[in-house]
Amino acid sequence: MAAERGSWEPWLKQQPGFLGRDLFWDPATEEGTLLIRWSSRKAWKSISLAEVETVQERFETLAREQTGQRQGNPFPLVFEGELLPQ
Image 1 (cartoon, rainbow, N blue to C red):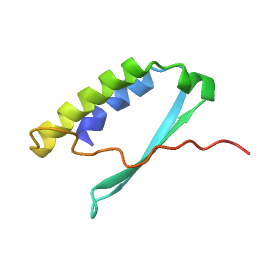
Image 2: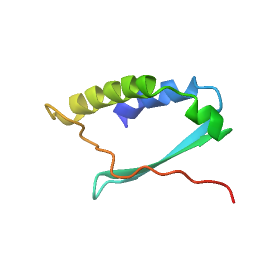
Image 3: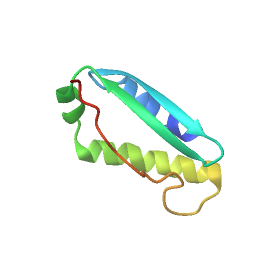
């Protein structure tokens, strides 16, 4: 959570069209599900991959510091999806 607060949370709050996010954490498996809400798909997709990668690098650095892991991502992405209104 400290890594999230030091990286994704402040960055997301500055993005146009960001509405909010919910993080559901399972301490038993140390896996989380993150739902991020946007005002529109266009607002979400207008963010450059380079910018996202920069924030992800910051998250991974902070996560390694918090977990004591020396390399890699302590919380690798398992699945990414998109919910579309019907």
